[in-house]
Structures are given as structure tokens and as C-alpha cells.
Length: 249
Image (cartoon, rainbow, N blue to C red; front, side):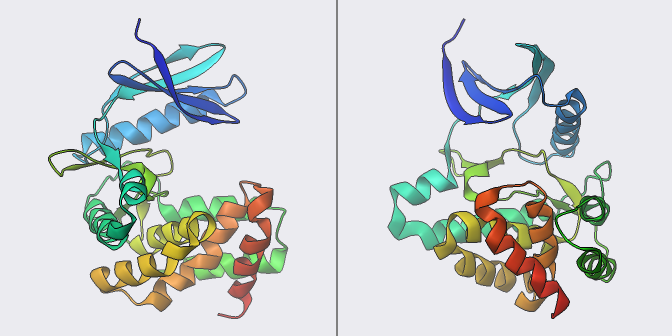
């Protein structure tokens, strides 16, 4: 048996490489339905021809469940940016180009972005009824699209192979909907994790997509609320500020 190389450890899972495979092994408390749903989403995306790792199996592991997929050779855009900071702008442009290309795919089996966000916001006790109402009204006013939205499109989820081709990882949050929402999520992730890249990313995306920055900004209180529902204390203050903007924009 090949040695395990730990790649990531979180409260609900451990991700490791084993030979030519990558395994996401979830804790026993992680719902079985969530694991199978992630596998289903990934399989739908893969089946529509989106460059992504192939799903190999879903099965029991250490009292919980594990998702196994192929290992893809290459480096993530995050790794490339750290290795060559002087090329950050070039890699940021590549990230946006890939995000826009991914958005051109259609995966009709996926849940609609708007419905998923509505369900999360409706269930939240962290925000008051008036704010929930404002956010839901904002969602209802958005354009209805069917683009493939990754839901966590950040440099660490994009692998660049030696031949220059790419592969997109981690489709657990993918939906079918509006590219502006997906851009807002990426902008939020940059703001939280790499704030120096947030504004350059947004300007680059909107220029290449021919989309008004203000349009992406209308999604920001919504995606902030959805992120707040994940209960990460370190993010709470910033997210609450973003959500409050919903009452004035």
C-alpha cells in the first residue's frame, strides 16, 4: 500500500494523497448524505466535460465515509503565486480566464444558486428578520442565469499542469446560476484570506467579463450572509459589516 501524504486537515475531514489518488476522509459526524451529494455534484461536473479530477469511488472509512478521486499532477495557482510573486498579476489573469471559461459550461443537474442561497438565509438566526427580508428581496431581483458556478473559485483550487492545461478541484459547492454571484464569492474569499488581491481580482474579472463592478457588489451582502452561516468566529465582524450594507445599497 502506498504511503499516505497528508495535504489538509480540518475539523470534519482529512485530505491525503495515496499513490495516484486523492482521498477526502470525513469524520463519522459528517453526514453521509453530504458526502454522497458532493460525489454526485462532482460526477455531474465531470460528466459535462469540465476539466476536473475523475471520481473513483465513495465508500466507508474509519467509521465515516471517504471520497476517492484521481491525483492530478501540477501546481496550484496559489503555489505558483507564492513561488513567483512577480508573476502574481499574470496568474490572477489566468485565474479569471479559467473562471470565465468554466462559467460557459452548463450542468443542468445542479441546484440553482439562488435557491441554495435563499434556503441558507431563511434558516439563519444570526441575522434579524428585516435583514433576511432585504437579502431575499435582493436575490429575487437578480438576473436568472444557468452558468456553472464553482462556489469557491480560488487559486488553491486550480491546478496548472506542465503542459499549461488546467484542472479545477473541489466542486462541493457548485451550483447553476449567475456568474456575478460566483465572482462575489471569490472576491469575498480574497478579502478574508489575501486582501491585497481582492480589488485587483474584481477589476480584472469585471473587465474581462464586461460586467459592472457595481453588479458584483450587489451580490456581496448575500454571499457574506451565506458565509456567516458557517460560523467562523474570526470572520464574523467583517461579514456582519458587509451584510449591513444590504439595507443601504
